[in-house]
Image (cartoon, rainbow, N blue to C red; front, side, top):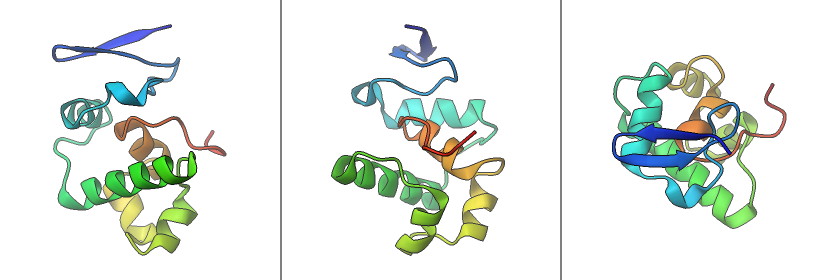
Length: 105
């Protein structure tokens, strides 16, 4: 299993860099992943999306899609694409330490 180092933490990842063990995730690791993904600093709006994704994953065992995020009222699709450019559900899930959402290429 591949591993990646973020600061002092070493985490297990898959071939695309998604964490394979959510228990290894932390806010510091999220910030480091965000930087790799081209996001200099996570904003309160981005943290709100990440927290919603964690809640959904814990309750349903699934990573929410863009559609689910939009229907939740947490954020509009337009805003989601603005704060997580270039594949928002995939990028947000990666930063959140979750697996790649189903249906993402």
